[in-house]
Length: 476
Image (cartoon, rainbow, N blue to C red; front, side):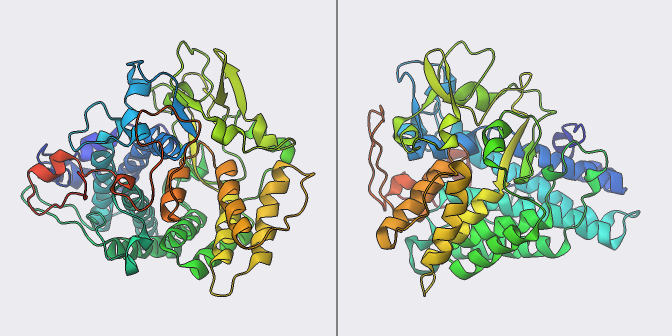
């Protein structure tokens, strides 16, 4: 991605401290100027992309929180009061509070609505760009709507129970912001069913209108921009979470058969995580190469050249899932006498880029969807799982499992392949599984049966305090 100034702060900002979902009237002046040209609109869109890499989103918390909650990570020293580990204790021990004291996740809700407000600002003003063609306007709107869908989807994963929690998802989701609101407007939480309808609508629009990103010219990484393939891959994931198995399989197959991306070979796989460039397997990434915030993922859970302390460590629960001959077992290295993941390696004080969607996940989505169709397709599921298993270990025998054993292998293979990429706890929740952690030094809530109020985060106090229409999650 081109060097991006912090255009978002110039254009927007979630204005009032009393409401996470409002924007200031003063932004209209800068909007009129910014959206007077195609270049200005592209800068506003780049500012939206930039916010995806913030430490409160994919730059750190979106990756780490699901892994430490699910059992792939543990705190090295519970009594070590360094924020890099101490502020993950609420995620580790499921002790989040509405005030969010000493909790990295306390800013997550606010930041994602900031991302959404930036995307909405682009959507609402793109028609004012005089020197853009209709195709260029549709392209920019499609990218913004894909980002808006992603951010809302990620909010539901933390603040709403999974889709299957009630029949037809008739339980509370999050406010879906189809437009930016005035400072004095109050919003309510939508049903999760309605959240998914809007997420899918945004992504279907994006799928139909995405071509070559305007910002691709001179960009470092083309995969840092939303593409038709990225929208289809995200639709596959959303339909999986919804339990729409036929469409999840359909969209995963579209991505697999497209040919634009391909799986890395066994020899390339481990090395790919130690390279600065995205791989041919990546579908959509967040480009952090121009962000001067250090390397939070590498520093906290990965390989850092300047390491002086240990914060969060891989658990034996995940390390022992890799059999002999599985190259993914080589994605660990030792620093300060502790094993750490090599999926996050520091480059010149940067995490460089974060993979959000990659092709391997599509095979796993198609496998899971195949096992949940009205007529269960175990042949397809085994074939897809073998693609990933045999990439990791070419000498692995073909799967012969069926029934419950095959379902368990699917869960374990997702855990092995997608470890430390921000998936595990969401898989546990949406599959309706109990949380069971063995190598865990948490002082409470080591194991939690599903369903449970603790499976979701509280709506932050500031979002509730000045809005009597906003309903808190049960148990907080």
